[in-house]
Structures are given as structure tokens and as C-alpha cells.
Amino acid sequence: MRGYREPGLHDRAAAAKAAKDKALELLRNKAPLSEAEQAERLAKSAAKEAAAQERREAMLREREAAKIAKREKAAAAKPVILTEAERKAVRDARYAARKARK
Image (cartoon, rainbow, N blue to C red; front, side, top):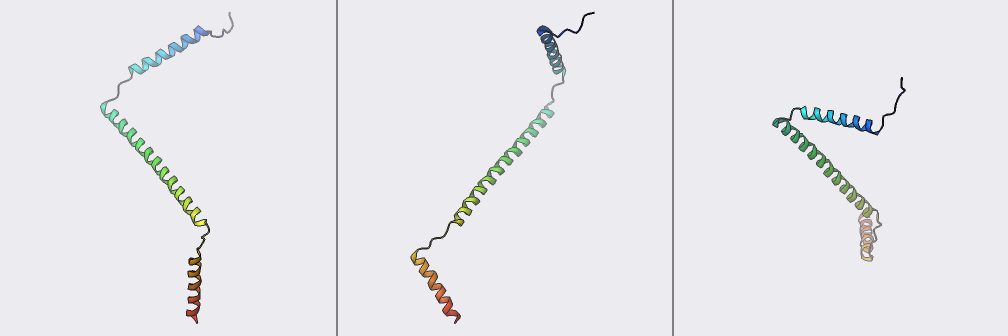
């Protein structure tokens, strides 16, 4: 009695060809899709793609809103430098308010 023999290249190739032929035969024997099934699959695929596109657009809108908010926050954080005339107007307003209280 002979011991176990490793399958060689030709043995492995033959086994792969047999498996491929069997899979192709099963695929050929499979019933084709009806028109209704094809239309249903296309509709599902289109709906799925539309939902994915909407998610992508929402994500882009969210990113853009975050960028705008970041810019506004940075602009608000900058110190306000008043001109000489603006400082004088603020000082005069304080003076007028103080006089109005008396």
C-alpha cells in the first residue's frame, strides 16, 4: 500500500478545472430573471444610489457649515480696534449717560 501523495500541479489544475466547469454548469442551468424581477432590482439599486448621494451631499453641506462657523468664530475672536473717532463717540456716549443719570 502506498502512502499519501501530494497532489502535483496537474492534479491541482484538473481539480480547479472540474470545480470551475461544475460552477459554470450550475450557472447555465439557473433560470433567467423575469422582467419584473429585473425592474425591481433596478429600482432598488437606483433608490440605494439616490440615498447614498443624498448622504454624501448632506455630509458636504455639514462640512461647509462647519467651515463657515469656524471662520465666523475666528472673525469674532479678533480684537476690535477702534479708530480715534469711534473711541471719542464711545467716550461721549458714556459722558452723556452719566449726565443723564444726575
